[in-house]
Image (cartoon, each protein chain N blue to C red):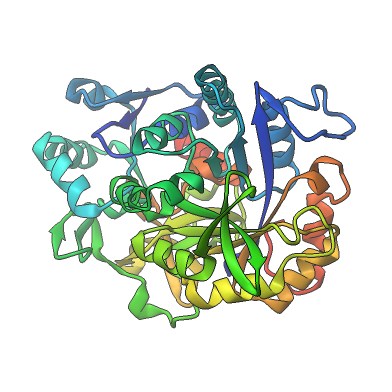
Length: 252
Length: 202
């Protein structure tokens, strides 16, 4: 039986993990390579590296980090941030990424999804969408959630899948950082139109939030989070044990 | 010496790194003389069957691989590389494979109901059907990472492991000295490395 995936997300700037990290036994707590190894050894099913540098120098440092990680971490790696062209896909895939997540780049040029899916296969193209409620509708936000594009989110996702996106990451801006649980209403609306894997992001505060997510919405394939894992509020191994105790298929 | 056959399909960085991680030097090469000298050959692959089969044919690597298989060289096909070992594929038409393992490659969709998403992406359990040297260091039920929309309908005697996804899908095959994994051992954590280590030890 296919298992539900638990995915930590690492925001990387200038070769450091941005949000603070708090683990015992981890030498350099802000080293993306060390943190990736730690997560891989402690139950993570996949890792997301998010490049939040803007400069081309930063890009180079980021891909070096990626390469270094891919030399020792043998679980799927997804890379996002600053992906605006198929050249950007090429750049990170050559450094060991398995999947590439597009967000603003796809809003800017939806054709990118199609071009990348044709070149590298749909399994490689992850459409990441930042969504916020505006007047009771779900809207796509750009620029890290600061700008309302006016695009209707569910329709955007439906089109994204049609264009060849192989997975969807749903980031709810409404629940992000609130730690009161995933945005089940938003995720359900997405699951109704997406027949590719859906990854839930934004809102997890404790293990129970993941149990509720997978129990309420069996169509959701994975849960993604950052700080609750980095700060050790949720240990992935403990979370997975709880999932198993709740009859949720999980890799232990 | 292990040679990873480079025929212009997919990125081989992780695969090469995974051999380095188990202390084995693996050379990425498209050079026939080098491939012919290898003790063990890895046939990787992602993407579409027709395109990959054409690249193998145009480079003449198809006959070389068949000759080496006949000489008893150990070959491991991974993902699309495994599918290429079969007689033919029904992915967008009918395309000829290397014919080293009896069976055909077919879409998963008609086998499973609509609640199963295609591609089959994620970690799934291996059900070992026959003992194989490939499984020397792993156990029945261990998890490996899959990404595929087509599966190999293989002759039963060639199927050494399956995985459950609405149907029992072929996960690994063996025909004498020719092996194949539908999943990605280089992305399957410790279990994957153990499978690569076992292949190196054969």
